[in-house]
Length: 599
Ligand code: GLC
Image (cartoon, rainbow, N blue to C red):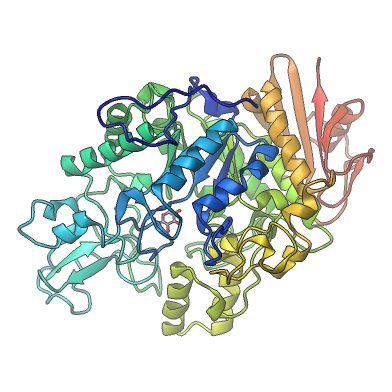
């Protein structure tokens, strides 16, 4: 991969930054790209303070170049009190000292561009930190910035600070009510996340212009796009209606009132124009909890000039008991998962574009959740999950360590957790009388800290992540699961990711082909056919820890049954196997094969 042509930043507002090298971006370049997410706190620590940082990332860039990824998405590195590990920003135009300096970020952008990798910033603009100067000013009821946030008096007839006096019944994502009483004015402010993350009021045009100006500043600094945090929350139902209350729940749901509001498309289109997202071919992906295919079709329709793609939550909300929260665990039958991904493929086939992901910094590790992380099946299941995802149509996102088959943390005590969501959940559930073992069990499955244990570089103490004491414990399995061990091993999960990423770059069937799900109700097999330009790829994946025979014995009734599948694969070439050399009509546990048809 070659480095990009670069030109120095120009214009009166251009920052004097050595890393500012706007790269030439072709229209639609992101349709063949693979994005790699770095969670800076947990990636690589250069100065021994136990917290990952920007120079640490720059020093490890060759790992990403060797993997072949096109884009690095950087979770927030802005100045922050770190209540939510940087998703609470107190200065949008500076780097937090724990991560380094602006000069370090410029150096990272330049080093990425030198390797042909583009850099996408996390954009957290539904809320700021309560320590952001905008909010500090807004606390004064006479300030012109009062209206920049959602300030409301107590519910009529209620004394501020008494139970039930909050302006509405919404619960916050990190437990407790979504309203915080500010003693100074006797009014409440809205925070859909922690009290240190007050929601910005996007109804106010000055807020929007301030955000767009900040985005332009980053584009001029050389970034290639934005991953937009909970971006569908920027338009709310301005009447802030009470939400439905689940049985036994202490608060109402903030859905539907807090998201996908009537002005969402308008705000996104306005941002698109004001920042020049289209002319400059910047990558945009909006994180959108609670969004539907219908919303995603609108938002990603190129004719509407809003976003390139969205992150749906539907497939990561399927292993939840009906009516429950993420902590109410439920089994996930394979057909349910397959059908869900299929619905998004078909829903966005003729308009818009999909993002593809199994995990990120908020979700458990893919291999532990959707695969089998036992020593026997970890490698095969990590590879097969990757094959299935990367053979869907859309832009795949790889979360750091996924390319090694890193597993959940295995924490058994509350003292091991650091994430505000997990720690608050533990306290709140204990308060409601939930048995401690049950809480710890659901945390071990669903806590965000599962994804945040440090990146496993080698088998040394602390996995080569830091020479100090890591902020979150390293997974003990780093002695065998690490980059150094996988690097030159052709049978490694890493090698399989490299092959999949290379295939996307070279084979237009992968990036552009039509999508079809075969055998949708099969409980072990995930079978996908992609077709384009007279060629086809067929994925046959055993997504179970038992062998699976394609020789079912039933009468052939068409291609959608096993007999039809047998006929299809009889003479086909295997392009990408998880188990090289194996042939025939039985798949080993978690074995998958990509067959190629046509010239
Ligand atoms: C998004 C982020 C998550 C964060 C939340 C609030 O969901 O991915 O990490 O806690 O928004 O910013």
